[in-house]
Length: 283
Length: 268
Image (cartoon, rainbow over all chains, first blue to last red; front, top):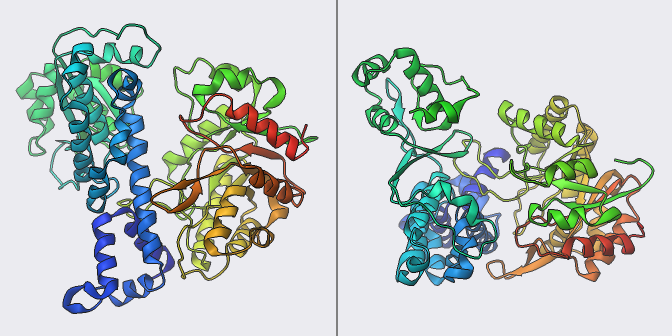
């Protein structure tokens, strides 16, 4: 094993809780057949690491990793904490999170979903008094949760012959028009900012550069995304939806840049438009 | 960056922008860990008033830096008119991109890694057209896979790449502590003569680590004493920065710490 590969192995030990637990068990002689259970090259690396300290550092990294994301993506919940007494990051000091850590893989979507489940429970359960003051509280938690989940790495994508909706592209249906009220939540206020009660649909997309974008999702855009199975040619989709082929192609490129669509051959993946949000918003 | 005096500064913490702007001549420069928010009302004034140093994540020098990352760094360096750009001596993402600890973590100090760092640092400096400083990162746990010491790795890296040293005092203190070495002896192993920028901050206790680690807090007096001792051994140092960037940073900490740094290092 060269040193770059050895570095990768150490990084995986730090980032991947189940992998680290298995390595610790194997190094302790609890692997398959009572042997180390590790290949000889891996065993040679493991034997030269202080595994106890590595495990502590892995747990430190795990708590740090999710704290960074909770602080960033649940910033509206944090701003409202003086009213709710539920600062989202408190979850990360709870025994439930400590118990969960050995199952978590940093960046993994399923792991993010497990952490999100804890966050939702903490923020939403027995929260009637919060809802009385902040009627859109559940929608706010859902909005921030969608952002939090979108940050995680996408699952491996099976190649498709035509453009497909990315599995990380999330459509969220809300009962309150949150985007209009969000900026006010981050400013000082005497009265809780009021949101308009009207159905609001949002699309969350994660780009290949890990940038998460949220935009309003019209019926047309939702229909388009639902039609992108990866098995239907763009020309056929255009015909089905009554669209001009050139306009559809441009929109697909924009959605690809945002990360909502995974391309396969039928249009370039190198195009970067300058009018993405506006043009996509027409849908 | 003035050439006739040593610049003293801090990190730009947007939630403390008003205080930083009100600090008068106390702060000479600001290190930029994140790009400015589009709606940051203070940034235009900050940009006018201070020398800005690019201290963002550009990419890990263990691997070639992507054109996308290079372009982003180039744009930020131009926006800041940064006299040099900083990167960390770290390797935090696996080659396949699947695992990312999203935190600082140093490379193995081997000949192979050194070659990779030198090659990629040269390419980075060429692409940006600006000097590079590299900050060393401490290692918490024993890892007997190195072929050379941290000091040897850094000195050889700077010699071969043309980059210079951003030395972090707290990082050095932690590295020495977790290696069980005398901290001043450990400092002497590092290429202090190649330091361009000095970082000073404190450390905090972490329950997961059962000990101290990097934290965005004020340096204790003994850390400041250590910084002053090391600073005397850095003939080419041009900037000293209070290394704290966090939304938990409270008002008053930056001006107070910068003032303490100025006094202790005799940089009035």
